[in-house]
Picture 1 (spheres, rainbow, N blue to C red):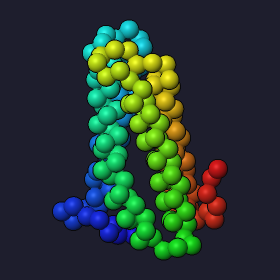
Picture 2 (cartoon, rainbow, N blue to C red):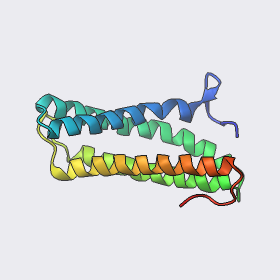
Picture 3 (cartoon, rainbow, N blue to C red):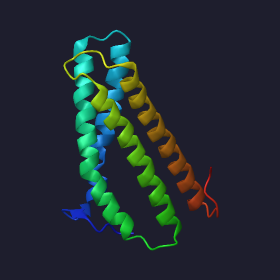
Length: 147
């Protein structure tokens, strides 16, 4: 399927998702460093990475939505795209809640804020693994997606 939303001839969604993906993953790393004894700077960096990642996700999402609407109804691609979109909305919601719960002045984030970030990262990793397994199964002409 060819993307309906493009930037300089390339899929806008695929170009834009790398920013929230990298920012949110790095935020979780800085949260882990903070938990391991990192100073206030690591908490502040994580705060701004979560903030930037959530904003980046909001920018990328509409382009994915445009592409999803172009997929024919009743196809496997449509249902996989729906699962992808709903999972990412959930991940973004977890990170957005984490962002709102953080003090943002270099202070340590609370336990709930950290838990939400780690849950968002875990869900994203699970979804990526599921998608890779599904793609491999589909490529080998399997008729069912892995569970």
